[in-house]
Image 1: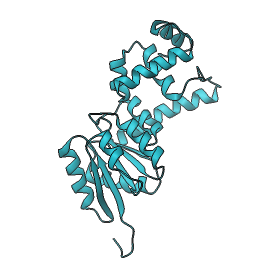
Image 2: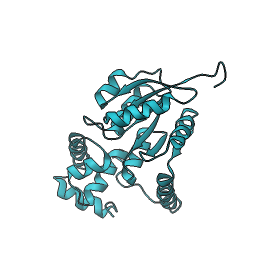
Image 3: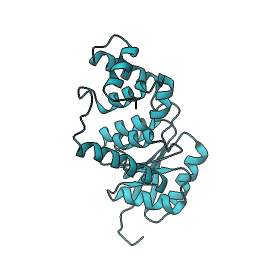
Length: 221
């Protein structure tokens, strides 16, 4: 690091102490980086992390809550912070949920030290970065979305939020709330509330009617 070069202020949020301490040690050993805070839960993260941070390393499963919701709330409070998700989840739903929440990067926990360093510096610089496995799947997802846009694909149920539509799609696939909670890395109570909001907004009597209505609109495929 050259004299006068700013030091990146980093926080690590992960409920597994071995991984959290190891990540903190790795980042703390790199030039131009300083780990100034750690948190082992969603509650602790939202309590101790301030807007003086540059990058937050965020896991998705935090024991007492979701890393996705923690990311969303953290960025609502401090929009200038960059969040890099580092997790074991590589399913499409987790990636999309994290990016929608505002994460600027997404790595799997098997990433090597050089990949982690590159990702931290990239997101701190305002770039968006995905691990190689995630990037390939993201391109497939985006290609499908662009094709739908070019053909004038209509977004079903425009009165719903993106989160509500996402949950409704999984309901239409026949998943129960516990499964949806795991796939989207959301608290079961949050899923239950979202399903209730969807049923109310669409003026439907129950979950079964929501499944039928959603499938008729093309969701749940």
